[in-house]
Length: 188
Image (tube, rainbow, N blue to C red):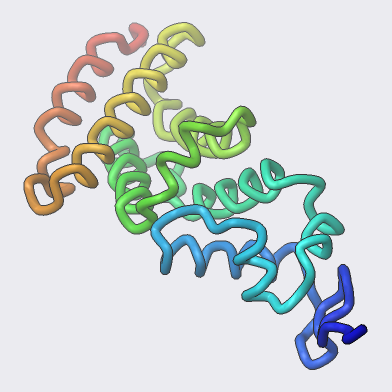
């Protein structure tokens, strides 16, 4: 019986050490090249390890997807304290849309996830941008839900009709949304 060139659960000896970071990096590269979330088999093949090696770092595919999505979402714009909230929220929104445009399989993955990790990253940045408005928690939650739903719809439209929309088309509707938020501002 012939033995394969790789051992179960271990990287091929010529490969640098396997790590969670390396797995996420390779998953990101496959997401970019395949325009969809890679299968564990294709990911393991690219890393030249047995599929079971991935389970040493992530208990299941959902955990790997959460780590990948959190890593990607953590790359969106980080609002700066003391800056104009409208400008900061616009930068955050555009950055998030650019991320979704650059990774065509990412939105579907985010929408199908049951974990809140990536949403929490975006939510924290949203809270930072809106801090000067001093909205109550219910208003902040409603504002977050409305913006995220709009951005996801916009991202879907970008993918559905390439070239029909651009990020500049976000300016009018986002300005309308920001005007509405300004009206909700707590009195000083």
